[in-house]
Length: 159
Image (cartoon, rainbow, N blue to C red; front, side):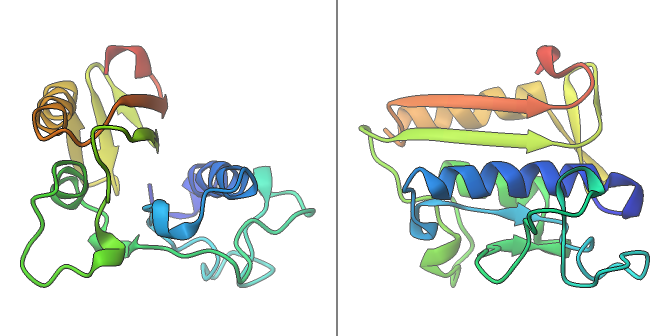
């Protein structure tokens, strides 16, 4: 999600990203997609920072994050392309999910949602059917062993 009132979505994503990295997963194995407007938002009293729940403490943004898809690049189409490996020609390796039949994949999504959908950028939606189709394609292409799919949204259980 983008816009200042969705600060928590960016903070939650960055908190999970930070914890995954602390467990030893390198950035080369993480695809991070962020609307990325919170750190530079004019309402942010400390430009360049993002804190958990908006409270000062640990800066989740900092210098040690690698955002692979930001702003207008964060689309349903690009997300599906990352999962299925069907990238446009010229997509850099850093924006590709490099997995195999032995890979365990964590997918975390947060934002606004409803019955069987999640919004991307508050402008488009991904449906449970879209996700199911993408996971089926991944399985057919042997792109994972197990997927842990975590969704932080209203009616997440319908996805």
